Length: 470
Image: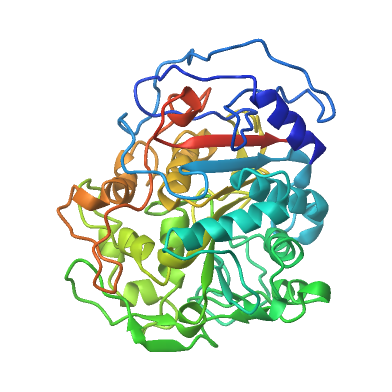
């Protein structure tokens, strides 16, 4: 936290006031608080030092270089700090030589990962510590629904993990696969933060993915000690709430899909997704909810729902079921936090993760693992940032032909950013009959070097990208 506070003090001295045409973001080492604009802190500076910068403005030095078309922000930012996305990066949090399975827990420094989680929550809420940060996030989520106050004891929280790579075609719960799924150490860190800092009782927390089976070792490590009482719900134990069918905003054939009771009974939801490529392009917080419903196809409910047709057409301006899931009153409507697991990133959901295909080339990774966590209360903003990182990472695009050179993978972000007047003409609802007019803000960074977004450059609207560098 000392290192975070040093960044906060430094950032308050910088004013970013020049836009670069429409899509902006600041990466490398920026940190920003509720009352301070963005600045840069070199990775060589120590947290206890308070080296002041004399820069009073920032002009991007590179031209726009993204494959995604450049445009002004679409939509309006949401959250306690509207449009804010926080990125924590600690290269010492991951130590893997590429041998064995990527997920083996001795590859990860649990204390450093917990520190990244807590520092991110504090920054996302514009506060000095995670306890105050969580309080702000719960209060902001309630205020957006016309309610006052924050978290109340006894309220239930459902955490949607992404266990896509575990027990894909069978009932194997060993977790012994090289395919990707939620990092077990990050999940434990998130649960620890919720219990220790947010004050939530373990028995009021459910981790779920009703399309897969959780690895036994993950369940064990996340239900011991102070986490005893945390519940896991999978495809074998998920119960459909038949009073809560998903109502899609576009008519198409497919099985009726029901939300699980662990979701409908929860007051809040946390969307813990992966930053990774997909055989259809990208998979982030939007697609994470493909594991949030139940139908007759137990092992592959999205196929039973006939959803993949909308992800494979390589077109812009078409309906997206991902937007319906973002807008759903019991899914996006209940979400208090969106998080991207970016500790070790896979080029695709079906790829075997190796040391070579998960070491990223772009700065600040420079041939190392991503070792990162991203958080936001804006579902459109966090996926926009994730889309920029993935599309501009050679290690990903070289190993993922579906993403390489194909900007149409962001169709759902255009639909979500412009949801009140969607390019497809779809009238999106919350699955309960209410038309949705805003879900968050979508844009792209000004270039892949400076990684600046609109708020970082002094504009009132757009994404605000905050970096915490260890």
